Image (cartoon, rainbow, N blue to C red):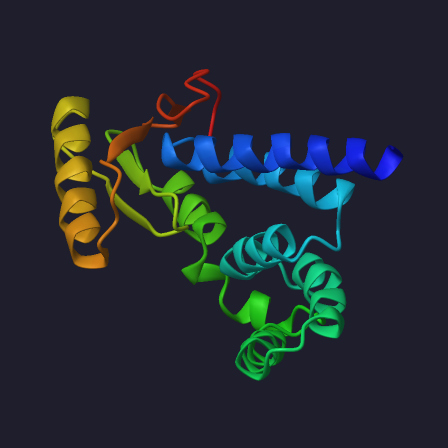
Length: 187
């Protein structure tokens, strides 16, 4: 009975995460739902695999190892095992590779963006596959020009990387204005 309830709750969180991703919610928001699904039934391979893959894409070495190692133990497919082992080697839990690649991460991009001058904008597109495209500009003549140019750059990268969802302005100057949060909080 308790197992069935946990499985049902997990299916709810998992379905919510999929829907949020397809609707273009910010990555962190649907990852919270996915984490809830995983925590309720960590042995459910489909949920564990998707969660591990998302953590790998985020370059979160410690969390990825926490999810991937048990998943590696319960899988029997050789190709799947080799892929997980390769991912574990590529993203060691000691964090060294993560620190080396900080400029390549979204967090690294946000940090760089934050340091640019006024009349800047950042546009993002995330899709359900975990693919993303972004574009940002700074030192534009005005805010409208910055927004338009950031969208242009993002759309060009969206086509290049085959990201399905459209680009949206995420930040104008130092304020978050887009995405599911649109709270106007400072970046």
